[in-house]
Length: 504
Image 1 (spheres, rainbow, N blue to C red):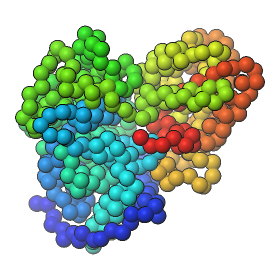
Image 2 (cartoon, rainbow, N blue to C red; image 1 turned 90 degrees about the horizontal axis):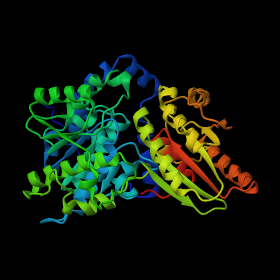
Image 3 (tube, rainbow, N blue to C red; image 1 turned 120 degrees about the horizontal axis):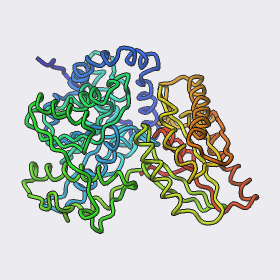
Image 4 (tube, rainbow, N blue to C red; image 1 turned 135 degrees about the vertical axis):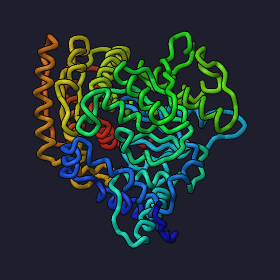
C-alpha cells in the first residue's frame, strides 16, 4: 500500500539567474560521494536492490503516484552503447512527424555536456534556466513539506524532476533514457510505457551490473513490462538469449530490429555521424512506428522494406551534441575539433573508425593531430585505448593529452560542471596510468613514428596547451591541427565549455 503524503504546492519565486545557480548548487550537494560509490561497487550491485522502493517513496513525496506517469505515453530505452543517440533520433522523428496532430515531446537523458538542464528537453530544446529553477524548487519544496527533509541522490532527483516537468508541461510523449542498467534504475518505477527499446549491449559498469554480457543483459532487460512491446537492436547471442528470457519472464515478446542496409537507406542521410547510427536509426524507427500506431492509431507503411517517408525529416535533422560531432574553428592554422563521448571499448572502437575516416576527409595541407583523453571511474586503460592505438599507423597522433574531468583551473567554474564523485589525487593518478597505457598500446600496435604524452591537471589547462601547441606548429609550417576529444562525455562537455560553445 503506497503512503499518502499531504504535499503543499508552494509558490516558487526562483526564476532569476541567482535561482538557477542556487538550484544547481543544491543539486550538486546531492551527488553521491566517492565512498558511497565504492560501497555500491563492493556490494556487487546488491546495494541497488532497495533503489526502486526508495525512488517510489520520493516520487510520492513529490506529489505523484508512479501510475500517473502512464499518461505521458512513455518510450523507455536502455542499452550500453547508443541508447542516448536512439532517444535523440526517436525524439526528432516524433517531433517532425506530420500526422493528425503536432506531437509535443519530452526527452530525459544523461549525462549533460555543459549545463544540467540539457538533460530535460521539451520539443528538442533544453528547458530554460527560468523553468529549470522554477520546477526544481517546486520539487525541492514539496519534498520538504512532507516533514521528511531527506532528498534523493543527484540522478534520482533529476528523474523526479523530469517527471514533474513533463507532467506540468503536458507533453504528448516522454522519452526516457535509462541511467545505468535497467532493473534497478530510477527510471524503472514506471508502470506502463508504450514501448521499450534496447540499444547495443556491451561490457560496462561491471561492478554494478555484472561481469558477463548475460548478467548485463539480465539487468537491461529489467525494463520490460507485461504486455508492453519490446524491440532490440541486433545483439551478441549471449545477450540476446538472456533478453528473450527476460521478455518471457516479464510477460512480453521481444522483436530484434536489424540495422538499416544501403538499400533501405536509399538517399536518406542520418543526422548523427558514424556508421553505427544505422542500427540506432533502425531501432528508433521501430520505436516510433509502434508508438504512433498505439497512441495515435495511425499505420506507418514500409516495415522491413524502406524508411517510412514520414520519418525521413526526423532522421535527417536529428542532432546529438558531443557524439560524432565536428567543429571547425577558423584560426590560423585552422583547428578542427572532433568530439565523441565514447566510454566503452566497443564505442571507442566505433569512434576510432569514425575519426580515421572523417579526419582524412578533412585534411588539407600539413596537418598535426592531437588526442585528448579522459575516462572516469575504475576502467581498463589498455582496453579503452587499444582501438585508438590500432589506428595510430594510419592516423598518427603527434600528441596525446590526458586530463581529469575537472573543467576550469580556478574556482570560477560553472556549478553544472562540478563532479564530487572522484578525489583529485585519484583522478591525476588515473591519467598518469592512462598515459602509460597509451605508450604501451601504441608499441603493441606496431605504429611507427614519434609521439608525445602529456598529463595536465584540468581541461582548461589542456585547451590552453593546445592553443600554445597550435602557435608553435604554425611557425613550423602546419596549416591545420585536428583534435580528437574522447573517452568521456564529461570531458567533451568540459572542452566545449572552455571553448565557449553554446548548449544545443
